[in-house]
Image (cartoon, rainbow, N blue to C red; front, side):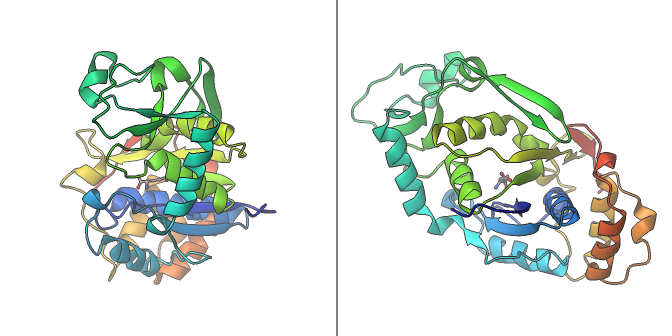
Length: 292
Ligand code: GLU
């Protein structure tokens, strides 16, 4: 595992569709924050959920990011190639008793709003999921945009899934293993993942990994408060003409749009955007309405 001497950030889309405005905000925000500190910016394709994957979407996302001038500093990491690393991590957690087999179904846990605090089902015929056992502690962190965020591990999180009963790897396991393997020092992403972060910190601690710094950007929503990715206003970014979307994403991040006015190429726009970038201007809100 590399021990990075400098800032390393990343953008980690799931290939569930073309790059839309909400994901461009996360890509641009993570790139600006990494570059401002002279750091690396890596791209990782989180393709561990084949049923949700749209064929061709990953390639399309990569091409659109390129058109936007956002290039990974290292070869792209594809999570579909990482099963051995996830399996080794899971084995370790099973051996030391931090992870355990669970045969509870969603409906078994419905009475507890899906929070697992102990198995309530033992049907040996059912394929088990693997969960991380959590204790009684409060788990919190200081987000550089959103401030302090805390959850009670037992009440709000419960024992959470690392490998699903259908054999697929859970996002929480894959993201922690790969952020560590890639030496990521700061994670910048949408605020929809704020409440995944305590789970990821619990897992980092169980594995003896260091915890990166976190910055959760306002989530782009439409006027009805729906995540832009899910709304009809979520048009894909036009790779043939990415400048309007880059302008809108920069403004969405609270930045001075005048500083990038007149840039004729994505590279020129990014250079100016970086010169004028001030992370303090990013609004400390969980959601912000995006003008489609
Ligand atoms: N792959 C996740 C998503 O597209 C993001 C993962 C992350 O940034 O931690 O929602």
